[in-house]
Figure 1 (cartoon, helix red, strand yellow):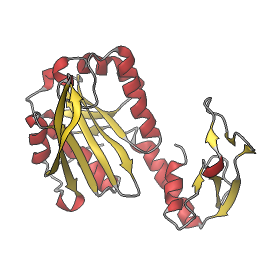
Figure 2 (tube, rainbow, N blue to C red):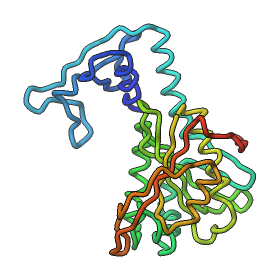
Figure 3 (cartoon, rainbow, N blue to C red):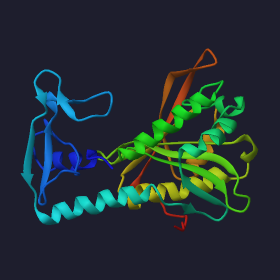
Figure 4 (cartoon, rainbow, N blue to C red):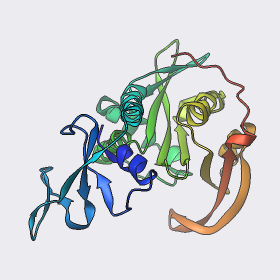
Length: 268
């Protein structure tokens, strides 16, 4: 886990906004190592943070109360463990995404019926597209900016879809919900069953306040799934996306923590 969450915590404790945390790996006990982000950037090869003009980025050790350090440590450890956990529902297993899932995702998402109403899935959907799709989401999870879960049937252990929280914004306590099902799993209520525990994860464990989702106007199935969990339509984005050469209107729906009702039980 990198130090991005620490950076958000530091920025929320009145430190100057032009100072951000680097990592906790080399931190002195009771301190946090900081970098001045105005003069640094990470090298393409993933090396140390440096100022290309003047050399190493400016570092500073900032004393931090022990209780706050413990809170950060526990939160970082929890975020690491959270993305390694499975969630079980009555009929499904939600398992964190891994590179091993590339072939399964490509086989399901390459169907034109899936891509037809998906904003984020192109068609055709090649093996390279699937790997980029997976790696992007793994990167978001490592940065604490996403939770990506593959949906499996509990009895047959068959892959049947995907659900994710993306663009998690800890400062404003919000995220986007995105989901799709393999064609063979349509009409069985699987997505409604999967979204329930994801919302519980969002509001109770991640402490988010708002979850929003987008779907094309001509996608009534997604509209019904979201409405069934209490999402409210907040507007229509006219000709927001282009699919198959046609500009499509997109509906924005959202659910606030105060409007959410926990009607699903999950097992870990």
